[in-house]
Length: 122
Image (cartoon, rainbow, N blue to C red; front, side, top):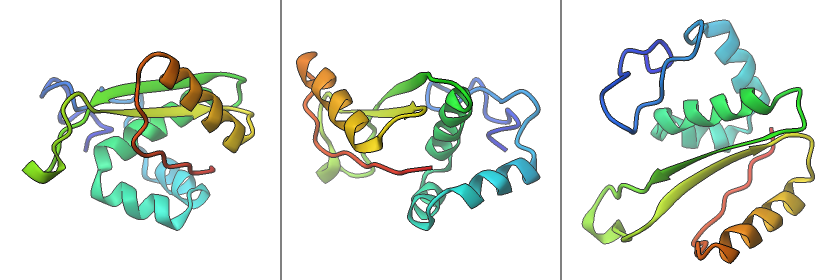
């Protein structure tokens, strides 16, 4: 429903519809390339999962990088972290560990403190 644009315009945290919507066959092919843990995590946050898929599609077949910043919204008071953001990055044709280290260094140089990083290879 998100990929088809049903929630477009409902706020900053809903991505725009993808051209062509979310064809089930396309999504199944993508899911088959993802690790089970990544898919399970995506089931709890489908909006972010689809945004990450969009980033992946933007860099597929290129030498490019695509990223998205989003203010972190805690699910409870105890999870609140003022000034926290989600940073999703897709980097094509790279060595994952090296790319993560370089991105971490760039963020640190710009006064972004990295609390947690999750690396998934697709």
